[in-house]
Image (cartoon, rainbow, N blue to C red; front, side, top):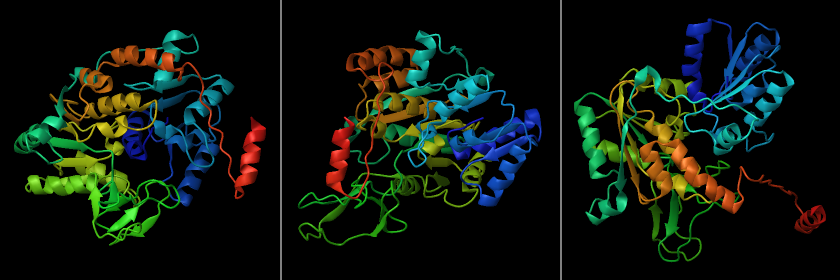
Amino acid sequence: MLVPEISLTPQMVDRFLARFGEQIAVLHSKLSIGERYDEWQKIQKGEVKIVIGARSAIFAPLQNLGIIMIDEEHDASYKSETTPRYHAKELAGYLAKKNSCPLVLGSATPDLESYYEAKETEKSNLYCLTKRANEAKLPQIQVIDLRQELALGNKSMLSSQLQEEIQKNLEAKKQTILFLNRRGYSTFLMCRDCGYVFKCKNCNISLTYHKFENQLKCHYCGLEENVPHNCPECGSEKVKYFGTGTQKLEEEVHHLFPNGTTIRMDNDTVTKKNSHEEILNQFKNEKIDILIGTQMVVKGHHFPNVTLVGVVAADGILNLEDFRAPERTFQTLVQVAGRAGREEAGRVIIQTYNPEHYAIIHSQNQNYEDFVKTEIPLRKLLKYPPFCDIILIRFQGTNISELKKAARNSI
């Protein structure tokens, strides 16, 4: 049983323990080397029958494999971007075929390629669940145009409507989730005189400012630098922070709602062992009013007392230079909306500068099939997957001329 986030493992383990007892092993990267060794040994010796974990659990040495299940199968985290590079879904398909066992891919917002294959070919079967668990109703979604908020003089990260709804939730003793898929305090540092942007010397992407540590950090390679006082290009002292992250959002929420308790969940707050579980347990036990987080809070969590979800900036994913950006946006918005109203009526507020974009419109309607009907013709016209395969070939080396020669010879 694969889950996309380590933070979802404890919840999934609890459900399996309640149904199947103690015959369960857990595998993920947050375990210590000793813990992983012990779990691996239990699996190899046949002492357990079920393995639950993140993508690396696909390598578990299970004997007599009977079924493979992938929860939130659309999630990009199943693809490893570091060595060894692999896609857990592709490996699962290989193992299922080798062991003659079923592979079950589950998602409320399936990967478009998986859905198209199931619906239009005979390679897999499509089964649709048309109702939420416990007959719960879908939350009501409202889209806020941030351009109008600026026109009205509101320069806060939170629209006036979202602020009102948060206040109502605090008064009603209900919980709120605020989603912003950018950690740190500011997303980049720029010189206002010459326009120079401080970038990572390894990755050539903008460094993110983290206020609490007073550091510039690269979210790809982990490089850390001290905050400069002057621009290295023109020497100007007019160096300013731009953009927003979860640290800044948390600061603003404290300012606007001093009586509300908050907790933040992103890669900066879950570095310690078991920190995922501790944060989620605090929120689940209703000791915290507002959970602020990145994509870690989007998927699969069940918080019965959450009746409000606020998407602070829906445009972050939409503006990525990726043909899958509309699909990722739709999936993320529908998934995070699903955290609201699990048992009581829920409300969702999506803040965006692009309310007319079809990904935003379809996510407001929570209609996956309508989104597919819009997206598939565009993919077909532009010859993107599922109508083709895209392959990236990478050449690495220390000698540029040799690299160019090798690349030319490979064509």
